[in-house]
Image (cartoon, rainbow over all chains, first blue to last red; front, side, top):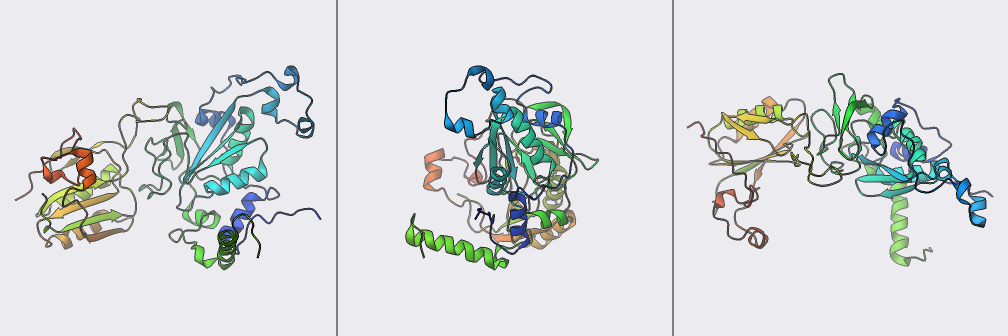
Length: 253
Length: 156
């Protein structure tokens, strides 16, 4: 019988959202339309329109060794062309951001190929070949994994995920890379490492509280989704904890 | 040594304040009599990027501005999140609460009484700063900082 992933336990809305984000059969909801050029500007790895710098010659030219694994695994477009490895990093507010670092890593591992995610408490980085990255970044920004106010694209100086929000609802950012403009749209004025951009890059309007509450993947009393309300999730975590504590790396009941 | 008998309060708004709101709030609070010391706490927003790839470049933050409080200009180095106040006695606390209610209308805040500033040096303080001559600033700022406290004349 083929393995059918369950993605995660839980009967709550949060658990459901987590499963929906992870399950590649569920299409991510497209909410905004940030262009390729905008994504390139925000990431700041190359100028828009510039050719992709390479780290090695294209695979077709450099001649591959005779390797059974290379015959099984088809290279991604970026790997084929010999692109550099570049990154995008997100900081997600604990106050009902639509995705969270661990969740992001699960989502990306289920949905994308050729990636190397790194998970930390307040930020999550994903590395891959540059042209693949741009496609992935566009998916991550344009869909329901992103909110302009509660999620920040931050390559460095990421502090802010666990802090209170500013008066206008934006997550704290020491470098203030994005600003909520008078027209209600959030615009990036600096790229992800904090270098000022020549033009502002709009990433759409922040989602409202109701949407955030319904689409969040974090349990948080203040966010309206307390963890204790999901008995199944607690039972599952307690079971894992108990097995790990009692049996270490040889779990059995 | 800071006297331990003075009452202290802590105001924590549910959101970080913009310089405009911080200015309004401070002007409302400082119009009351009997305030000895006040500290504005919050995450720092430096003028120069201190680390990372953009290190050393000016940190352009659209919101940043100097605020005018009781005729003195204050350069905000943080995004105001918490206000600690030391009072001469507990009598102005209801008035301060009222001032907060007047300005912080869009979100809730808490006002607590307790001890929030250092009353004596800790061993770590000695290790970091040595003997601090001006003990009034203990627990308020880094004694080695070159910026000095702003002294407001008060309204007595």
